[in-house]
Image (cartoon, rainbow, N blue to C red; front, side, top):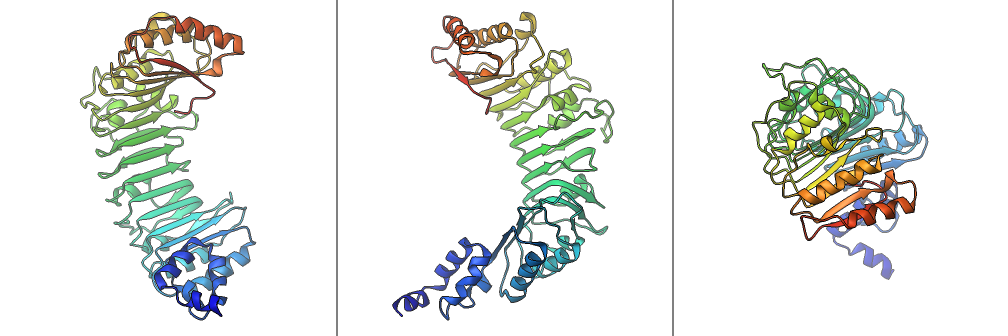
Length: 407
């Protein structure tokens, strides 16, 4: 009786905080605790379904909870951990209910590689601020006018039907964070987003355009898939430099990570003598290079316009052996504090490059070297002994080995 009285006397806001922390299945079970708890679960604003059950049980559970729920639903998530297929009519039924309950955060994460379809009723959820969709076909209506409150969008392994990434992003004016992973049927990527601050893109493309003046952090990778970078597929407004179109307006960028294919894409157009913008805020960059002159010139163009760069992670394909002239042709900002060198296969080239960094970086604090290129401990120790005896321009510089390049 005392326990029952204690549970019954809890303030509603405390009960809600407890229920929100529980899986929805357990939250429903709390209805047996006391009379006051009997219907408390039916008003919690966050509904999260993570199921390993069979399809019919999952659909039945979601339907029942939505039918019994009272009040606003601010977050709705279905995250399937097994290869389950949820029919489009079931998703449509859920979305129609959610669109009338003030939904702000929607996550539909499917693990099934088949054709899971998210119907156009998704776009009637006008109060959405966060949207994450994984492994599905996303149908957009022809009259789609955007999600005006959306700030965070993640699309992973999705097929877009009736809309392009360019259109989707352009009609979400408040978008600040965008993650695109393995998007199908979107060969030309144009992102025009005046308020975008973070971009993560992984996937193939033919052409790439960024008009994101507030972008702070960007990771761009192609999965190593070969695509035809030679043609301008997007309107270029007379600009023949892919480097300018992709990075020429990123005046607020602080962190950039690009792989070798994207670097080759940037180098496939006209390389300007210098960029019009100076990356005053750029402090961290990870870039993959090879020994092609245009790729080096592209990197130089970026480095020379990043006067405040602090951390550089430089990766090179293992089959490339750089000569001394090529190594010393790169001009790095003088304020570098951390330099990470990854994927050198030739120890002699690695040694020369490390010496070059030590002799030209007056503010260097750490030189981190990936161990991948060393066959055994003796090689690593011999390398370290030789490098340790080399003079350093910075009195603070230390040399570290790392088992992998995690920067």
